[in-house]
Length: 464
Image (cartoon, rainbow, N blue to C red; front, side, top):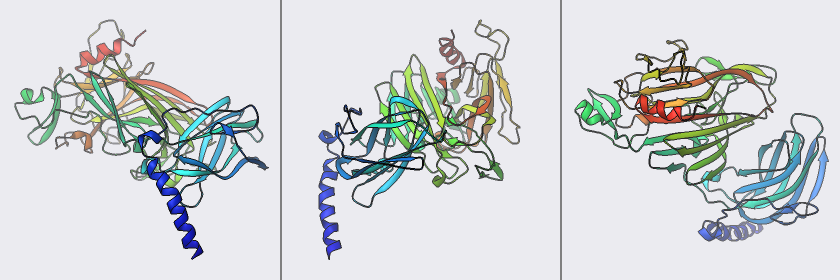
């Protein structure tokens, strides 16, 4: 009876505030971590806490203090090491813990959505924060502030748009790019002799009825498609045991969208402005189940301007696995398969007005195709439709001239929405470099749409 009574008290204590937490007036929209002159600030006030140090772990205990409803937390800290952190909290049930990772910094800030954010999970008590160094045995670390926020729960798909493009990401897929629509080229989907075609004015070009006039150009069939970050690290070693993708033993492979089982990456943070989206995720290891979520973070800022989509990408790994020289996809780019003619400039006079372009009209996918790399000396390539003046989508990666490309299930798209089908066209700007933990890396890429000439002209504005 006492247990039932305690449960009812907890139920009525938590749920009214939980329900009210969804009201607009109770949603936090500004995020900072206040500090005080001495001690640790919790939501801007002096916190009652205890510090214990066991081996290399420093724990700050807050005793299950009631904090108000939260689904997002921030901390301010100083550290001379890469750190693993664990936060323990509770809501309507038992205390739970989740891990996070910190980079070195002085008066640095870290923010994260809690596990279950997209499932509307919220908490209201803080128990502890623990920290341990990852790249050294001893370190200087100090926690100065903790702040807990009640954030709006966003929809899984988020869009921004301007007069030229509509751009979308999917939070369950690590905020990878999953939607791109050209708003000015009258792009249509048609079906000709049972096969899907995509082009500007496709209905008049092919003499058939348009099946769709709002065409997503990004293949979003599963977690491995999209336009996303993906990195390749070590294979089997003392610290890491690989798994299998098909019959192939797979290396450590953090993938923004998720894993081969279509399980979702963890979204860590998202910020939305009128013309840009910032996301941060904790990716999965491609060949392994979700329980083997990687100790790494991917960040990206997507923005729209002057006919271009810009993506600024960043990655840092906290695994400590051995350094490995591997080939990287910067990025992995999957568009709809009806755009299956690969075009690029491979001449010796880039950006001089030389209009001698190279076309690959019959690409297939590997392993049957091998792994064909094409030298794109203007650092761009594109997939277009059936004709030289067809509509297409292009990828530009500054300072990268080697492009891997292929087409999977060529000619097998059969429906009005090729973005949801398995057939796809693929590009990656490839670079060989050493994959290292505790070593942040970054790159940029750009997307453009239109005819080949329009795509090339848009990219030419980026050349310095």
